[in-house]
Amino acid sequence: MQTIELISFKLCPFVQRSVITLLKKGVDFKITYIDLANKPDWFLQLSPLGKVPVVKYGDQVLFESAVINEFLDEITPDQIMPSDALQKAKDRGWIEYSSQIIMDQYRMTVAKTAEDYETHSSALSQKLQRLETVINGEYFSGDKFSLVDAAIAPVLSKFAMLQRYYQVDFLSELPKLTALTTKLVNFDFVKKSVVDDFEPLFDQYLRDNGSYLTQSK
Ligand SMILES: N[C@@H](CCC(=O)N[C@@H](CS)C(=O)NCC(=O)O)C(=O)O
Image (cartoon, rainbow, N blue to C red):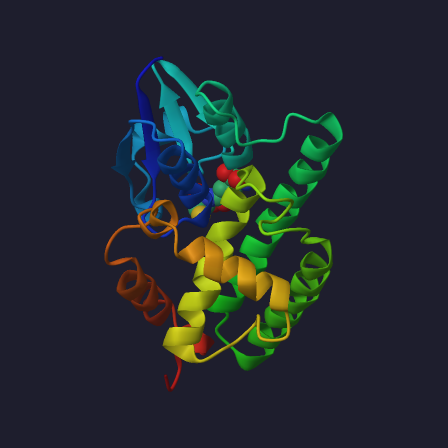
């Protein structure tokens, strides 16, 4: 196996998916943080879309979190992506769906006005209601942690933080998602998938950006 270097931004939930996958699988890797507000030239040379995560695998470059995670899973023992073609295809669909949820959640947290906040929070709630109906088992699909759980864990752990910091609750009416959140946030490989000061950093990022959510909280 070649060396693995993950290029990251400390607050990025897409990178967090890859860290979860690497930690869950016990793979050695190096992590390099960049500032997305000031992207270094070497990063722009590597990343076709100028986005993290990017993985350097030896001298090869990979981008897109879902693709990176499948690759990391395939080159290491004990695959966590289901082997059944139909289940794999379904999970890939829900991984993409959870990317859209990540974006709604991000837009909601950085919304500057009550109106924008409501727009994104209602889009988010609708998607979560649908997600609730497809959870089937102890994990997202079945009784084993899989890549779809790695994809959704960042968004669920963020909801747990939003509740503690700003008293907003998106999961209270969604018992399956609530149970999945409790399960996932308690795993060490999820807890350690962000920097130690992630929550205060994220809170500061929102305040610096004039987030409506943080006003009067
Ligand atoms: N579809 C991409 C999304 C990655 C993404 O949006 N990353 C954000 C940070 S969380 C980024 O790098 N944004 C920089 C930019 O758009 O300029 C993936 O799954 O890897």
